Length: 353
Image (tube, rainbow, N blue to C red; front, side, top):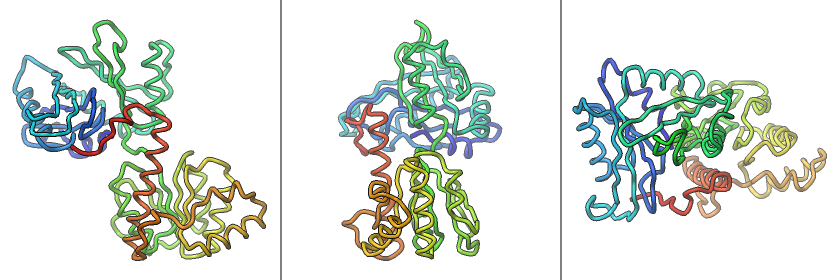
């Protein structure tokens, strides 16, 4: 996952001075982070992470050496994750170092702020230099070679990054195609009660955008995480229309009747939702199934509602325990969906060094 938003928020060129963008390029085997993971390094600051440990220490050291070298703007480093780095992953990481020149950072960050959900950034790498360009959803891709066109189309619809060999010209070693937006999935939570608040806290650090809906303004906390959009409305179900296709919906309002109305509205939208989760017991599930059947929904449609929600082996009933049961289940579902859409590197997706 990229962290362009974090970098854009924390980096000020006039205050922090020149910076090196460190990006994970090709990977093989077990690695701390995936292709496209990045961090920004200045003389005094490090923003983001590529996995920590000895690998990150070396990346910072090499980046600061590049900052002081006026003859170079880019470097590529090939690093096996073995005894030499005191890491036992056994994999291989390619580190791409690029000095952000002039207005380069501003051009990226401005586009990030203007149209985060429909932009892809391309870094064209050669042995000694790197150039970037930004492609939006409305740009024509017909002039590109097929591998690059396909990669851009995937990134416009699915956050992530991939290396495209040969890029656009014989001089290009490869092109790194990366989504400019950080959020990998969208979650809508109905209900700002105890469990809703605990769940937002659990999900806020994940790569998702959250829509949080309730009619009771007083139930929302004063401080709302950056990736959370609060909606106060007397018609909670109306928020569904503005949610993107493939969203995950979690229903946990203060009213069973309201829960039922939201379930009915979601089922009426067809297969747009990636997941519909309803908080409650098996008894509640049975009652809802009967009521939805009376309203004309078939068993196939009704089966799209998961109730109870969360990981069944985690049975605690405190709000935090419920939230920490729901969050990993949701992340698991998202990763399974993503693996079906973009299967590359799934066999190398170990999550630690």
